[in-house]
Length: 357
Image (tube, rainbow, N blue to C red):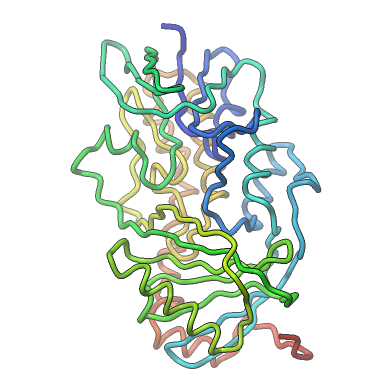
């Protein structure tokens, strides 16, 4: 075996795991994007907001987000629009506004030298073998294989690694995130969170970024998804949100787990980040959970591969408590009656001193 561990996915979960793991391991990190040489520069469909929990984890890793990753404007207010109850409230939040692609590039640049990178490679399949797996991946239209003792799925919401391990038992509730970038001459001083049960039972968002406006929504993956997204844009225009021509359109899969949906793998496979279901069920914030689950797995593996799953599940207890709390918080956000009561009460809201739309 050339490698002890193969990590599928070079997003925050995969990169953090590669960085946390002991240098005693021979590690392969594989991703379909080329985040170094500039080929296949497809950014993840993401609002590009770095939450305080993720900031804290990066600090614990000894990493400081460089200026080149951040974009204008840096904003500290969220404008919450509730179309179900015809309400609007502002809340203070401390997100970093960033370029998601630049963020991923920067993370990859921090990977230690003992990790072999296989970028521009698409993972295709797993075959269980004695003491591990044989994985296959596609590079420039040619199939390659590697044998590894341990395979790590860090490949996002609709993880191929998870699918191949669990098959028909993979029952996560899934959404499709659609977002479009628009020209605008308005310098909006807030992010937007939009709730409308006729569009989605999750939420929609607006994010000003580098002189553009992103409009996005997490939608049920049905034929009406595009129709509902068009309805969202129409409602926002009628509400007074000004935006011009569409510049680009992005899409990605998104999960919304419950505590019982989270899985960690088996004796020769593990899952981190969204692949394992580690994401906030209330806000869909995933970077902090990607970093935390990667740390929990690395600390268990640094004691050895044998019986690592037992240690991994133990290390995950604080992460699981956080997800359970956010699951309990969800009714206050997504039940329109409770949400209306909370917004009317003004609890934790931030009253603006003047209007600037």
